Image (cartoon, rainbow over all chains, first blue to last red; front, side):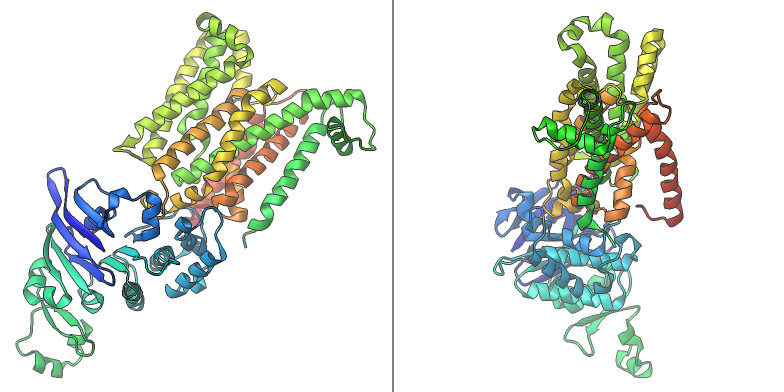
Length: 278
Length: 348
């Protein structure tokens, strides 16, 4: 379990985070939502001890600051929003860096197997021998995803692993967005914890076990998608008209943007695709 | 295709060949088999190859120390270049860039020009080691200054390291220039010879003076190769995969200062070795520091021995400083890399 208690963070006079608390339990995919500047990425950095902020982060009941860098690397992987590489590493070499906490100097056959599996999961097998610098932004993002997936692969299955993802789908096309979140979901279901910052409310509605909605650095609301996502909250938080309805095919909510039609049922019959497109 | 597996054995062969030819070529010619025979004879293994006592004396007293100094300095410069490029994530970084070389120069020039006036007592105590020691000290001072200037809230800002290096380079150059202005004609000649870089001063004493520093630095830097790879992902990502980034940065800065300071102290400023060797190797075997760092040490050693053969034979019997040879080859190569980079927009 990962618990965050009363984290506050200020730059100059601007308070970025204001007494944020959250709990993420084993098996959960927690999605952090919020408008631009709400403090989503800052919160993720604070959870990773990257900032000097007040408040505490506990991982498996122990203060995160008490772990060594090496111990944390075996427990937790972090996918940052941007990872820039300047050296011409091959894709498989970049993914292998995810295994660095697990071996001393030379990688083992097991490390190679884990890397191969992670590369397959991220759908980049055809790129594995390529120079990372020649890939597109979306391909690079999938390589970084494979790297963190390789990192959290552990031989001790009973240990909870933590995966923190900061906008993991920002450069991905629709199929890879879903693939990424499916991987995150599967990983969480094995008894691990995933915390992801997302922008797409519908991806959050579809995959999140729990949503934390940030507004001006404060927790606006937290709970299941059903509890958090409603017309008023979304319209107010994002300053854009939106309404929530049951997904026509899947067992989850769906967020539509724009003014809510007076007779949604009629409108749906007239223009059958309009509602499901969004 | 990257040939990682074969590169190290090939480079070891190249280095051995460079040593044999480096020992053999010169005014007194010694054939490769004679070189091997003399060296084995020293180890009490007698091979069936004839050689004269003159050849043996030349090899053991003149050629071998010079070749070994080339080996040490070449290895030190190349591995320092590779390590700094890994640390700064900038393939155009050179040991001289963070000011270590100019710092070392300042120390040596100060001793040459002002030694009798200011440090007469020290010079008596240190004897022939005065120059190397002075270089060590000023190189270290510059490195610590660069490091301090670039610290912010417990973190090192890499761009500030480079900018502080530029400023300190200029400062060291200005102070060196001031000393040169006061130098006498005789001093001036020795300064010029020294600032251009040369292995001409090699004796067994210089080898013993710098070998411990350079070998320690090379050995530990090779061990830093995995963390250095992780720096490719950026510092915070490196920390997330279990690297103690602050510690690694300190170790690398101190070790490169040690290796470069020792090299400059005994051979002057030899440019571009630290830039070109890692570049060539990245093209052949990729950027993985686990193979790059040891192979940089090997190739740097071989290249400097070969460059020294050129330096002492092209205008035979006169000898040109080796720094001129490396710069003549290195500067066009550097321009070629720049043009190539601009064209492809991909950094090698």
